[in-house]
Length: 125
Image (tube, rainbow, N blue to C red; front, side):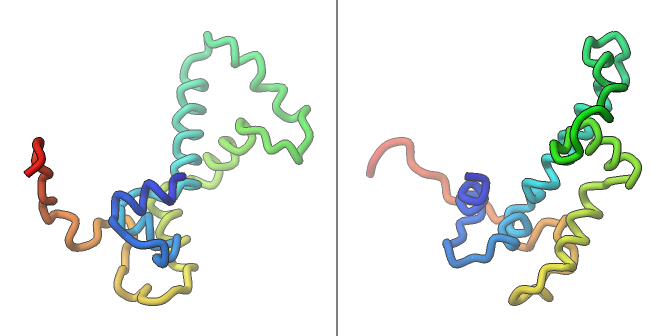
């Protein structure tokens, strides 16, 4: 669903490789946006000690490691100094696809995004 939305935004065809979609639409990849949202929520929880969820924070180690609790993941991301743009740039560097040399920094908008789109008439011609 997310890839389909990015294809609609960019106007690309199904033949466009999936790693190109975030670059062409100038929207971070879904996994990076998920991590960013998790950190945002975690920081909200930690900054407000009166929330009932604070009772669950010390108990995060009692769960199975295979469950990958989000609180543990958020703690790991904070320890790793996670930044969305740096993570996106490193994932782009590991991408080995055609014409990768055309984009040096995936976090910057690709050329042509500032071109105005033709507006549709509100009534049929």
